[in-house]
Image (tube, rainbow, N blue to C red; front, side, top):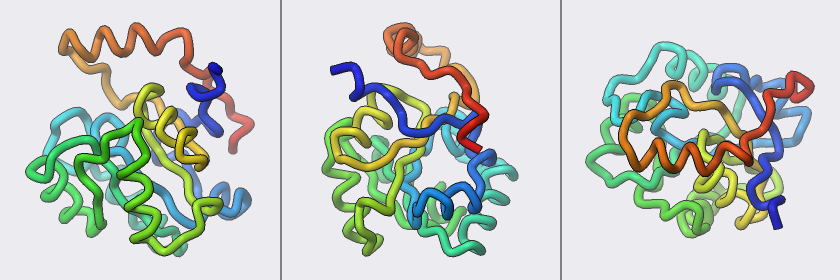
Length: 166
């Protein structure tokens, strides 16, 4: 039962995920969470580290798409800055957003992984969809009460950082 909360791979942060790792694992496409994965929560500015990483992934032929539970006004300008397609209102952990994104990418789900910082949305949604998950630790802890409660509930399921993924 608890396997549904277990990520396939664990990295400290998104830029630690390398094209070499993805190719070794036969991952051709990544579904990317937005808040606290590519940037801090509700931040409209794309960090330089995310820009560089996206450029590296594109240069190595890795297909990328943002799948976010946020609404279009949040996702659209950020995705445009990165030059990425997106699925907003993804309803994670439900699989609708992942299904639409995988279809749009034109990839077999066996060659897709989802990257995100939350166990109960990103990891659980990936496992329900039957795709691999790449858990990254949040860029910055959220301050709001609902997020603090959610993070406290996730704590027993948080993976240990494992450098063997690399």
